Length: 157
Ligand SMILES: [Zn+2]
Image (tube, rainbow, N blue to C red):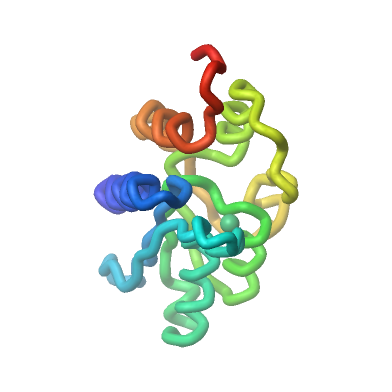
């Protein structure tokens, strides 16, 4: 719970800095936080997702065994790009606060144009990854962060 709390705080920090509200942390097999990042797409590179950054950091800095024992906590479920990267580098469990399906539902509700990448559950992309989420207590807060970021003015609540 404390790890997800940190992810939501990172998402909020990203939003405050003009990026999209997503934050993620990497926790090793002993429970220690070893890396954290948040969304950094405002410069125009829409692959700058924290979950992808974590996968690239993990493969450069951790053994295959350590990667398999690690857990990625994240404010929003991995997109297909990040789920694929996670699986390709052999990282372990994923715990997310809100699901891709929830985000898609909110974006549809706010009439936001669809993204160029389909929303798929992590296990549709990476079937062997152990996944836990969503965690209800973060739902309202994450919805509010996403509304600030994505909801066009004039769309009713
Ligand atoms: Zn992603």
